[in-house]
Image (tube, rainbow, N blue to C red; front, side, top):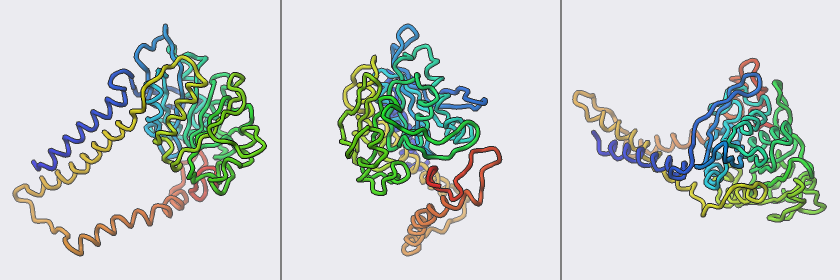
Length: 370
């Protein structure tokens, strides 16, 4: 056996085990795969984080966390882990048509209303202390939940998302994103990246720098001028609290940004009751363990190839060297980069969704920009 294969497998096991330990806060949080039935019998899935000591006799505040378009529940793991470490029950949802949740993707409020009702049905959840957080299209998911169950939550966080009409209006119970006002959603924190690629489609601001002064941002906050960052508007006690944060990152990076994760934790600490403090953030250790396992996986592939190449009786394999190796390496790097956008744009026309599924954007664009 190739030493490279041995090293690779060791890294996979050690990195994966360490990441799993961090994700359970070293045994202090139970993380289980869960399934439940949504509207029209649609199967929805996710991960359920339950801190130690949470029982029906000692219920805890809870948060529904939802990822964005073409992602999965794991995208929200930094937020979920940090909340669970502080005593929150967290349902990390695979929104409809993603991950472990059945298609169609855009039906029934993206699965948000059913997920909120399921979370509130758990006997160890404090039904009077429930929050919602969503990234990108996950923001639209939790907005649908907030609109469908208006008395079922106390506060909400939008991570690089917006409470304004966007996304496909489809059959099966789905509709455009509910419009935000000074009273809806209840107690809302907006955490939008400074380099926000979707500032135009989500906030109708062509330049992400100008999001603070976008008309719909001002209407959400009830402000006459540009919304000030890190300043609470409205009245949290009355459910009209509003705050804007602009972490220095990009759209996709906001879920794994320490400042953004901290803003989410702080807002729920302000608007929900029953959770406790936890020192610092540890989610990045899970990502580090995952990286080690990923490197090990790559090394294992080369190790297997090397082991097979050394087997007796195997014909010699021509190996590119010198100029040929560089040509192959550059081609392997350039082809995916050059073809990614065209494939994303035209693939839906070549491979349309099956009849009965949610409407696809005709040009393969981001939902809401069709």
